[in-house]
Image (cartoon, rainbow, N blue to C red; front, side, top):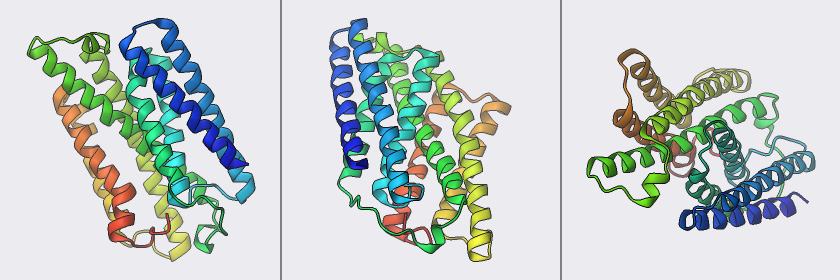
Length: 271
């Protein structure tokens, strides 16, 4: 049953993506509203798919690549709904919805059958640790695209080549504010994810830190964002500096999330 809702959600996301791409061409409020409601329906259906899979599996379904990518896209959708509600940035749906759809299509290419949970994952720390880690990853993924848009808009303004698309984007100040909002949410999520993971490791393996590849890269990523947040608050880093650093930081997130699994392995290779 969870597969039915999974593919139904994918269809709604794809329809929403199509509508938002039309919105890029024809700037009409009713088109954006249609895309938004399709997106909201997709998110709610996706949430139902995750809940149904939870009851069918008997555990939090974030234990393999299929489930991980699916949950990541759900977190991206949820946080983007929040940003849309706060900043009224409907045009960004033309950027974020294709990303959500692509990740969900990618998830569909991996085996989705429910398997018995490995003993090491049978812990109440599983939903806590994974939720905060994936929420942080989702927030920083959105900040990655916000940063790219900031740099594109900034360059357009500097060269005095303002396109119709650029005119519809939020201002540079608004994009920088959204980036800071992403930073202020993503960093605590990442911090809590690392702390809960360390506690779980101490319970499961008898050591709170073993320098496993994913642990190491998580720490590297955390240090990077800690420096970035410090410089933002203490030195006043804004604009291009923040955008470039957020882009670099996301590649560290990406390697920690997927690169370690496929290239380095380790204790987290079952994810």
